[in-house]
Length: 164
Image (cartoon, rainbow, N blue to C red; front, side):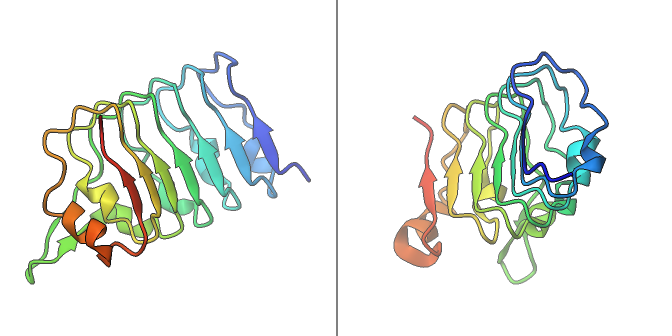
């Protein structure tokens, strides 16, 4: 029960062991390099989690339920097959809104590199994000509506890395 870091990477896991609900002090969970098709529900049931890595799995969808992880600061979804982020849009006043990503107020570091994303604008608008990596994605356009405000200082010190 005192465990704060659990590294289950490189174990060919297809499902997560049911042990997580008995680890109330878990802060860091590494599930990288397995065979997961989605972020396991068990990982979404640990409210103390501050860092979650599901790098290099077979995840195709943005993980629903991430908003239950109110302490989550670092999220690594790189090297998966995620094609689409939750929707964003423009409200009646012409301001960008970012729907489901607005609930992820504690995430400061997000790695989406090497997925199949064509649009990352909604991630750029996450409220606390300071580091975003999205290289290696087939981005259609490099977000011209958003990037000028970030690079001009209106982005609150955000570091963004555009694809190469």
